[in-house]
Image (cartoon, rainbow, N blue to C red; front, side, top):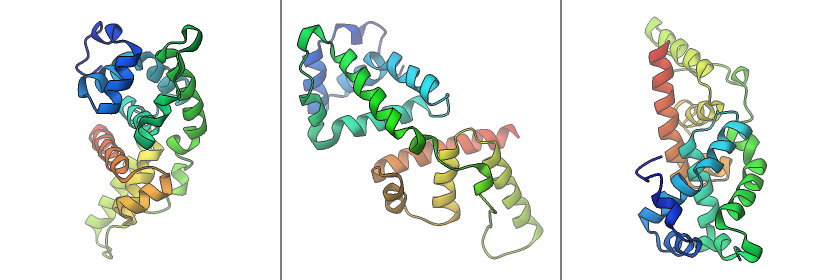
Length: 191
């Protein structure tokens, strides 16, 4: 959990969450995603995504999904028959992530990444760098991150092109790229 105290988020009413999210209240947004949705997103992370997608990436995906069209999805919450916002978000989040699972996990295999080339040189240093990059890619647990780095850093696609391929926003591509680089560095340093 980020800066959300374990009890703060429990005292926020459903209507306060909805209005706070719509007006961009940072405290409410953080309490929503790192308090109210904490169990839900961790369950999805480990049960559905097999621990291969970072919590913050799930937050980004859910944020983009819910905030689309000025948070229109929140207008659909009616609270009928005692249904809480948490229960409602759980239902729609599971549906959303079930549909997005293959895209988020990445439909690529390490074998699909043929060869990494650094520039047009063929000297030993370039070969060793390419081999290190390939080995690091092979060892990275999140193959979606590998694909993002492959597209952007090796093949030269820009963020807009990658966003179109992933059906997401350019801003989210930059967030994913950042986490991919962090994972790349961690895996590289561990080898």
